[in-house]
Structures are given as structure tokens and as C-alpha cells.
Amino acid sequence: MDTVTEHLAWMAWTWQTGAFFAVIAGLLTLLTVLALNRPEVARPGVLGITTTRGDRLFITLLGSAFIHLAWLGLVGGEVHYATALSLLYAAAVFRWV
Amino acid sequence: MDKPVNQGAWLLVLPVLLIVAFSAILPLMTVVNYSVQDTFGNNQFFWNGIGWYQELLDPSTDLGGRFFDALWRNLLFSLLILLIEVPLGVAVALSMPRHGWRVAATLVVLALPLLIPWNVVGTIWQIFAREDIGLLGWAVNRLGIPYNYTADPLSAWVTIVTMDVWHWTSLVALLCYAGLRSIPDAFYQAARIDGASRWAVFRNIQLPKMHRVLLIAVLLRFMDSFMIYTEPFVVTGGGPGNSTTFVSIDLVKLALGQFDLGKAAALSIVYNLIILAVCWVFYTVMTRMDAQRN
Image (tube, rainbow over all chains, first blue to last red; front, side, top):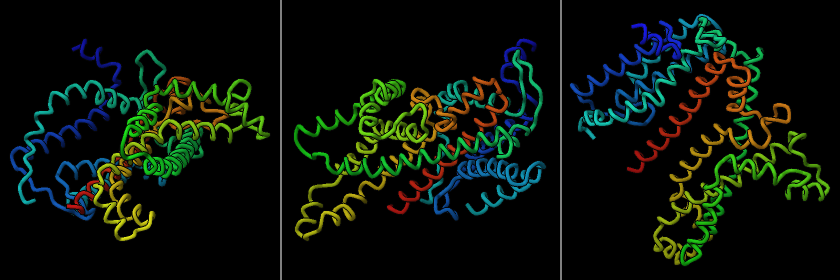
């Protein structure tokens, strides 16, 4: 166990970033399982492009990153509001895009 | 269109994904980890949360001011080279021969600047534009126009923009030429019978055929110029002052010059996100155009 920790020391892990990546990895795994068990039909949305679940996840994650950055730049601090906003945005993307 | 997409085939790319994990994903994760911490070396890290991001996105701080200055500079540079290289590339492609031995000769000549390593391009222009021994710098000064890229910001910008135009217009020209080659002769013959003007031929036959490759050219040139590092680093080193310090140059100064790994990591992430977003917009536009065509 110690050697694993030593080998990973250069990556400077924190539990917060670990949780962040675990959530993303979890979402990707979920989508993989869904894709294998319940194949989907790509559908057109408000952007005029056909999207699959994976596309929508990508749009959600990228958009959420910018929502957080914009919140920090324009409002400052209190990022959990930005996170709440991102969840609303995610729901909108999965519903309409 | 109603057929479900079978995503199972994606499992076949798993080996590639493993390699990419080691070459790209793990380093990127490390950058994310660094961006929320501070370090003084020796693998000792101190939690800083969103501190660096807050500083980076606030133009009144030293870090934020630097970042936004470099970002605007970089966007201006990208805009300038797109405004010059795209029309120039189209013009070059339109005037290229369509038949005979001259086709091969022109292609070789056009491909030459693309084959030169970037630091060599920088060195060539660094010498070429010097006012004491460089042919360009010496000649311009002899014409009575003051030009010195090591002291005057305008000269430095002119040098770097000209160098990029010299280096990359060929790419736009070659892409457009490929688009032009896909137009059958019958189209031109029909246009001639109809008595179409040169402009009408360009507007209604050539431009629609080049549309897609032009979009790719704009995407490639934007990305490349937005991430430019080597050439300005070799020619001006970001100077005089900070006048040609683009985001990537500032990033290296921050990470390797000052060893501010936390700040540099936060900047890297934001820089990366901007590039990813622009890529996605271009990809979406292209997909939409394809969908409309079908």
C-alpha cells in the first residue's frame, strides 16, 4: 500500500479532486452500461444536431465548467450556487438538446 | 435514422484508451490536482481550493491581469492571421494551375514552408528580420521605415504575423485547392455557356465546393495560432516588454520561470477548456452542415 502511495505522490491527489474524477468515471461507466444494454436512437434537439446520451453528457460537462468559471469571474466565491445552476443546465441539456 | 446506434463497437478502442490514459488522461488529472493546491517542491502540497481560479479570473490581480492581457493578445493574433491567411490562401488556390507538370511544381513549392520545423522557422525569421544583418530588417530600415522587432512592439507584431502568414498560408491554399479539384470540368463548361462572369463562377461554383475545406482550414489555423508557442518564443521571447506574450508563453513563464505550479495548472485548465469549447463549436457547425446537405 505504501508503495502505491509513493508512486502516486507526484499526482498530488486530494479527496476532492478524487471525488470529482470518480463522479465523471461513474457517469462514463453508467453510459457504457446503458449503451450496451439499452441501445438508443440519436435524436435531433434544439441545437439542430442529432445527439446521443454521450454527446449530451459532453455538452453538460463542458457547459458546467464554463458556468463555474463564469460564476467565479462575474459573481465570485460561493461555487455551490454554480454547481446548482449546472445541475439545472444538465437537466435542460438532457431534456431538450 | 430510426435504427438504434450500436455503441458496443466502442469497446474495441479500449487498448487505445489505455495508452491515452497514460499519455494524456493521467497527466491531465495531475494538472487538475495541482490547480487546487500550492507547492514549494519536494512533493509537498497545500490545499488552496478554488483560490488560483479566483485569482486567475479577476483582472485586478496580478495573475488575472496577465492572463486576460495574454488572452486578448492571443485572440487578436488569431483574428489577424485568419483575416490574412484565409483570403490569401483562397486567392493562391484559385490561381494555381489545374493541369500539367506545373501542378506538381506548385504543390512542392507550397508544401516547403509546412515541412520546416517550427523552431527553425523562428530562427530563420529571427535572423531575416534583424536590422543589422537580416535582409528584411536591413532593407526596411534602408527604405526609411524604422523597424526593430526587439525594441518596438509594432515591429514585433508585424514580424510574427508575417512569419505565420509565410509559414501557414500554404496549408489554407492546399486545402482549398483540394476542394477546387473536386469540381468537374462540366460545371465550368456550363458556366461558360451561360456566360457567367468570373465572380459568378467563384460565388456559385467554387466557393460552395470549398466551403467545407475552408471551415476545416479556419478551425486548424485558429487552433494552431491560439496555441502558438515556438515561433514567437524564438523570435521575440514574448517581448519587447510583454507585447508578444501569448497565453502559452505566459504559461511557460509561470510554470517553469517562476515555478508557480498551482497558478500555471489553473491557467492550463482554463486554456484547455477554451480550446475544447471552440473545437466543439466548429465540430457542431460541421455536423450541422453535413446534416443539412443530406
